[in-house]
Image (cartoon, rainbow, N blue to C red; front, side):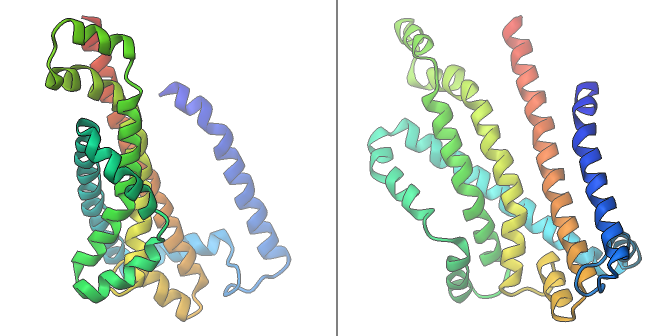
Length: 254
């Protein structure tokens, strides 16, 4: 914790300095609020309008968590299947890569046409956004297993299940968590994009309404909460990673 604080004060000071410059320029050049509000105006709007957008924030958070959970689960399952079944991996992995050449913003209208404006197309969008990073990161983690340890376990007569559970999966955990951290931040982005396409509530809806009424301060409030959600999800994944890696190292040292 002390190390994190020691390393974190420098970027924090840079952020504070940028906010001070932003505030000073807004006041000095008398920039209209609808064009670029000062940070103090944004904070004031965020505090005073909490009752206006708190349900939007809750809706986006709920949507992000559900889509993130499904995307990570499906990604881990697919990556495991592709790893354990080499012929399937050779057949489908190129298609997996090609699928990422299609922007999600292009697929989103099709999902709305096929599944309507309910919750299902929104969860599908977030799942698709989270699916690819975790799948690729997990496959890379499996491939980075030490060949010496793999050969040793094969010589010891370990089964494929034992090799996967005792060697390949534990050694892939750092790569898996790298993909999970990327997916966690992408989940919020996917939720906001899905809300733009048609929803009754959510940060994306709040941002669209603020933009149409030229409430730039509210747009910045929405952007701020998106950043906070991304950082919160990222921080929770980092904490979970440290707990699991620490427990694994502790068990390995016994």
